[in-house]
View (cartoon, rainbow, N blue to C red):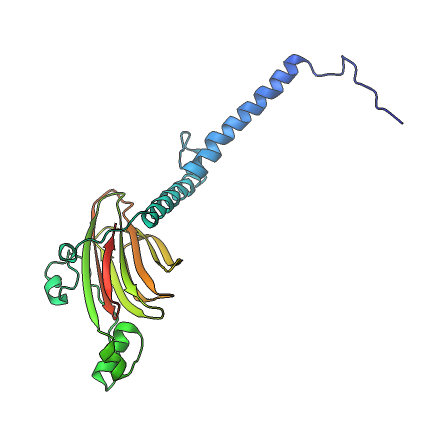
Length: 245
């Protein structure tokens, strides 16, 4: 069997050479940590290189998403308490609430299509479904409006109690100049789903279709530096609307 020759002492790197190589490696790793890793992963940019390379914004987004995921998990794990409806304006008439809205663009569910049957037209516009008069009597239509205030960094969650396949029309908007991050999602019966997410959004509207029986709605977080007011209007045959904390 052939054995390779052992290197001589003269062929081995000197201590000074080893120290120099180790120092170069440490300096290189430190430079990469400060200029690339910290900005892109944590949004920390002490040198300004991360901003120049558009890495700092990436890190800030990652940190925001991680923080929101932790807070959402804490909300789901904790016992949820319902804010009394009287304090949040649940089940008040649209006319009564209109006078109390902040100075934002009006929000409302999509307008009804023009069809002969007035009752069927209303149900279609509010729930997205054309149902029979008998079913309309069993399903009680409702319209709700709620206004909440979000301090910088604060989050809030509003949910509708819905059955599978039920549809609710919605529209929400924040006060002028404001924007929020949001997550439209649902949970119930051991199931959970995320319908849509957005960052720095001032308003949204459409229809929310329940994927299963449970609570479905929105979680908002104010990532700005100013306090904002958010108003949401909903219409449909859902059985309850609640603010969950």
